[in-house]
Length: 142
Image 1 (cartoon, helix red, strand yellow):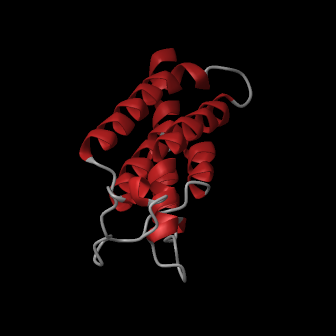
Image 2 (cartoon, rainbow, N blue to C red):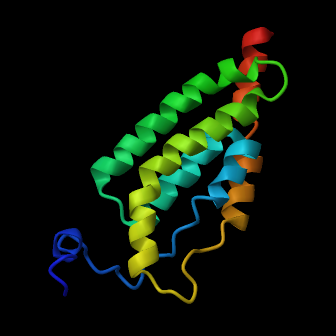
Image 3 (cartoon, helix red, strand yellow):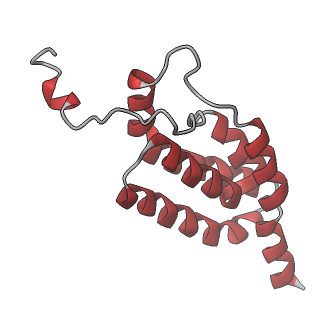
């Protein structure tokens, strides 16, 4: 191993072969825009486990996601694209928290199929959880 890379690689642990492939961070943007922060938080938290993030970092990600979920009903009240704006902002924050681990995966993961498909889990999150912030606004208004 090169001496120049030694400090960066000394903490790297080999990926267990049975761990599922993580999802792309860019793919999570669609979940954020169409499903909002609730759906994104669930996907980002699951992905953090796939990336092998330490438990402390995963808790930080979950805490940030929960704060964004609390703020989402207020943003939906904005006329026009409130949910999309909050979803996009949520994606930016949660993607920044996953970025280092995703880059590590891209360097040390298998190159032939680096990321898993987010189509099924993403649709499930959007359809299953995307309505929750809107329902909270409707309950508050009615």
